[in-house]
Structure formats: structure tokens, C-alpha cells
Image (cartoon, rainbow, N blue to C red; front, side, top):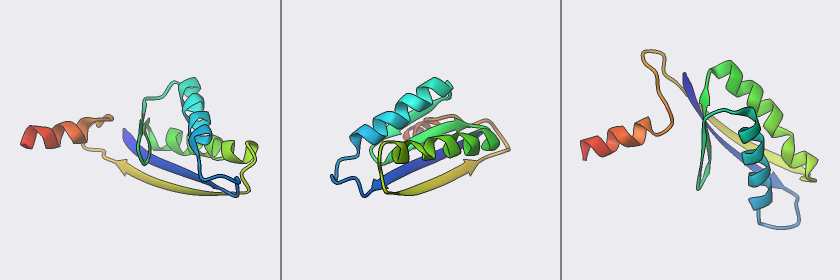
Length: 98
């Protein structure tokens, strides 16, 4: 199981606000029925790497469909294969050490 942090930044929208674009992405993730969590800097999604990459390919088009002229996408994958990881596990591990 892997975690993917995704940040999609639409440019050329005429406004600095990106909330509507983020909401589009969150609605799309809800329809995909995958574990995800929005944070202040992006969205963390849980799944198998192939599934996550296919999902990013779909989501990537959403800002363009809304009229963005340019999109910058940042993606980080943490693929740990020695044990199952889930959203929130890393935070819990740090809190346990404090």
C-alpha cells in the first residue's frame, strides 16, 4: 500500500483563489471511493501505486475542464512494502513518541 500527496495548482484562472478547483478534486475522489484526506497544502490518497497513478491521470484534467490555462502538479509517493501503511499512521507514530 502506498500514500500519495498530490498538489494541483491551476494557473491562468484570473484569480488567486483555487478553492473551487480543490472542491472539484475532492468530489472526484469521493466518487472513486478511495481513502483520502485534504490538508492545507494538498491531498493525501491511499492505494496501490498503479491505482494512484491512474487516478492522478483522471484528476489532472479537472482544472483544465474548469478553464485553467496552465496546471502545475506536485506528486510525492511513499510506497512502503514491508508493512501496510494508511493515512494518519505517520502522525500517530510521531505523537506516540512525544
